[in-house]
Structures are given as structure tokens and as C-alpha cells.
Length: 354
Image (cartoon, rainbow, N blue to C red; front, side):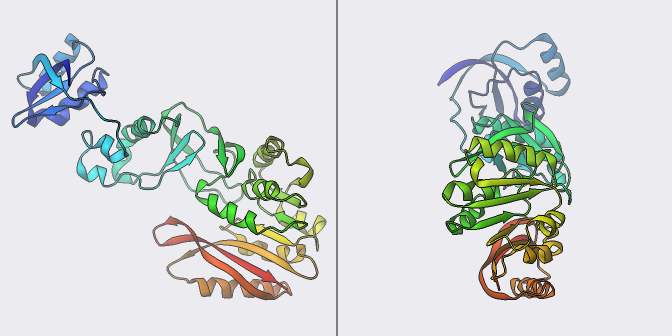
């Protein structure tokens, strides 16, 4: 228990009064708001100013200032627990269920019905996760060509750059300049673990390097060519290659994957990563031309919704590969990788090409 100065008033004015007190930044969040059958007691850091009392008096009847015994707030274990005294139950039900943590940045996506509560959500995330410095909100879709999106600043330090750690690798990223998804972390590891010593790998849409760098660190004898059309992504990739000490294993090329593949990398690859699900079908032909004459393996990523099925997507891939005068010898793996919208998924198909 801890004794503190408090504001006491009838329960019917609770939500309105709490918001006003929070705006004046005198609410003592280390102590738990106290309630009984008739009254609410708000713990304060200091004696309320005359301005606060005047504003409250216009909204709340019979305010009493007194000393009260409060219990200390336990550190909340979840965002819902932290915000349950601040937001209505219907708002709590709409809180973001999936939050991307990239380095010290949290990225949220809110439904239109709770847009106005972003600040409370952002500040709550900073409070329950001491490693976070910034909360951003998605402010638009990912662009097709450069795979970037805009973000709205929500809370903390106003920035979009960070350092992210994943499977012993380090990545410098600016989220508004280059694509990165922490939801693909196990996919990065899955693919990298399949790479065989001595292979030549082409990462057609490498971004800042999460597939490339992990594969290079796992293998001593490997040659990797990375391609990306986003100059910022290439700059970050070059920095990340140096940071992770894999310079001798990776050749980085800035440009369009079709042009680079056809002009410089025909018949060179044992394995190709095609992580551009928005339009991967457009690049299957050039990927087939980059594979060695004896064939190789393609990790093909695309989107699928409820109007399709995995069998249909594999059939579509077979058709695209047939148009490139190649054949699928075997489907080694296929699965949903992540949900990107209601009834829409990113999927992967690992196809062995003859």
C-alpha cells in the first residue's frame, strides 16, 4: 500500500475525469486507480493545479481532494491488461493482435474503429516492452516496384531506422526505404538451412539481405548473387554484408532482376529465391533461364486467397515453367507462410526444376 494525494468523485464521471487528469500528466501510473460502490479515487503525482480543478469542475460534480491508500500497479503482462482501465471493452477487443517488432520499432495496424486510440496503444506498447523506442502505424499498402510503404509516427522517438537481430545476423534497416518482414524469420532460416555447400544461389529480390546473409553465414563454400532495384535496399545490404563479415561470398547487383538475369546470370544458379509475391509470376521465365542446364531449385513466393488453393497455385507455376521450356521434376515443399489480410496468405512453393 502507498498513501498519495487523490481526486475523489462519483463513479459516473470516471472515464471523463481520468482522460482530463491524464492530459495534465499528473496521474500517478505507478498506483492503481481505486474504486468502491460509489466513488473513484485517482492517484496524483502532485497537488492538482487550479487550472486542472477548474476544468474538472465543468465536467465533474463534487470533486474532493484527499489523501488515500492505494495499491501499487503490477507491471502489466499484456497491452489489454495495461489499457483495461483506459479504454472501453469494445475498443480492447479491437486492439492489434499482430504487432511486428523490428529492432526497437513496433509496427501496428489498427482498424478504422480504433484509429483515434493509436496514441494510447503506442504508449502502452512502449510501457510493456522496455526494449522498444518507437511505435509506427502502417499508412498505406506496399508499393509494387520498390516494396516500401509509408508509416505514421505514433509514439516514442520519431524515426524509421533501426538495427534488427535475427538468427545471429544483424541488419540495418530504414522501414520507409527498404522492405523487411520479421514474420518471415523462420522462412529465412528454413531456406538457409537447405542450402548446400558449393552451391551458387541467386536472391532475385534481396532487399536488405535476410535470406542471403543467413545462407552465407551457414555455409563456408557458397557463391551468392543478390539483385534489387531499390537503391536504398542495396545500400543497406552492402552495409549488412560488411557488418556480418560475408564480403567474399556475396556479389551485390543493383538493377532490374529480368535485365540482370538475362544479361549476366544465365545458366549460373543451383538455387533461386523469388520473394516478390506481388508479381513473382512475371519473373518465372528469367528464373528458369538463370538455373543451370541440369536444373536446380526455386523457392517461389506468391499470394493466395480463398478463391484459389495450393493445388491451383502449383498448377499455375507448372504452366509458367513450361512456357520457359522447363519442367517441374518435384514439389519438395509448399505451405502458407503468413496471413496478410482476411482470407489472403503469402505462400511458398519449393520446386525442383529439370
